Image (cartoon, rainbow, N blue to C red):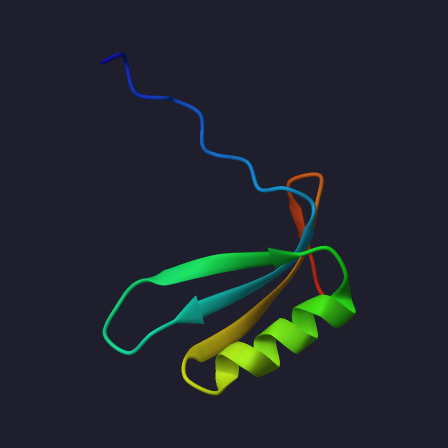
Length: 64
């Protein structure tokens, strides 16, 4: 075991959605293109709560 990391984790560039099941924590799902992200959001929205986060580019959120 070593020392825990001190800097926060970095997210890859891409489009993100936040998926949450009822009564549990949320996870972020990344897709390469906006179209793929919208298709994934539709699929997950059938059974889970979905929130579109936006695009991550060089550690900055870009609104869609």
